[in-house]
Length: 117
Image 1 (cartoon, rainbow, N blue to C red):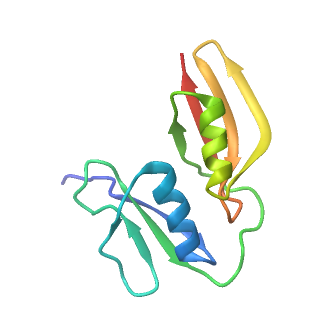
Image 2: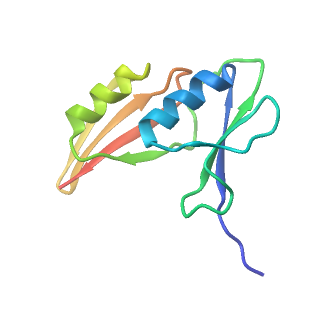
């Protein structure tokens, strides 16, 4: 049996807004989607697709799983996230191998921007 990771599903109240944010950040086009849902990419893409699932309740508490997004320049990455409607949480970690900053999308799902040296 072969197992393959094909996607990450994100619960969200405003499916369209969150899909636009992540599409803009990652440059992933919208793919075929179920009614009311939005999929970025296709199931057979080299990268896992992002699936935005509608829910009625907003996020509560810290998400225990998050995405890491590699960027060439951490300051430009932060500016891009903010311009797309996300925010910088103020949390930054400097390591020998690079910088990690914690960001949040428009529905407050945390993710990391990572700049490797």
